[in-house]
Image 1 (tube, rainbow over the protein chains, first blue to last red):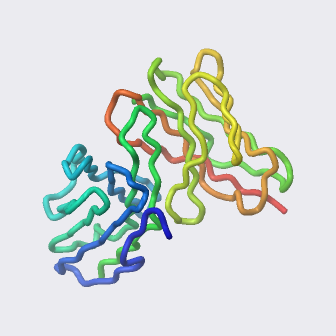
Image 2: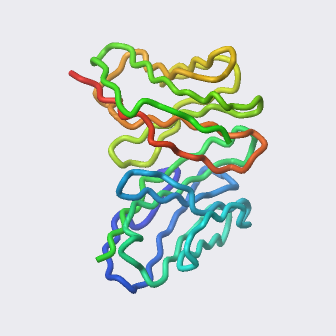
Length: 113
Length: 111
């Protein structure tokens, strides 16, 4: 009964392909996030949704498109994959509040060849 | 949100207390201090948070100086499984929900 689960755990694909990463949380939270951790281990936020509404959209290429079908799910679709997209992508969730503790998934390791 | 500064690495003997410092000299009154850790590329794990008072939970203690410009995370009896990168994050209680992760402190617990 993992709280924040991501699929797949590993994703190996060719440049130019389109791929999706799925995230689901069973914590009843109303806010979900996508973070990217590059090869230098810097962890940066990409997007956040609160009640299916986009509230954070950092400077991310248009090839990245998040989709939140409901509060418990936040998927990340990536078009025309590039070598530089290779990274570990983490999903997180929280209950919107002044404290806002975020809980992270195990990550999806994306390798673009 | 205030910026944080942490030492890049620390060692600690197994069974001893690990004291991890964090400097956040530009912190403002409504900003929380959070600590997370990341064990070998797993997802970051929440440890503890505080606003003004010292805090303790089953994992660790958080000591915040009176002027709130620095804090220390204490792992009272470090084990080998505590080897990880520890991140100190400061976030406004009224700001956006995003965390800004720094480079953290790589703690190595030695047998």
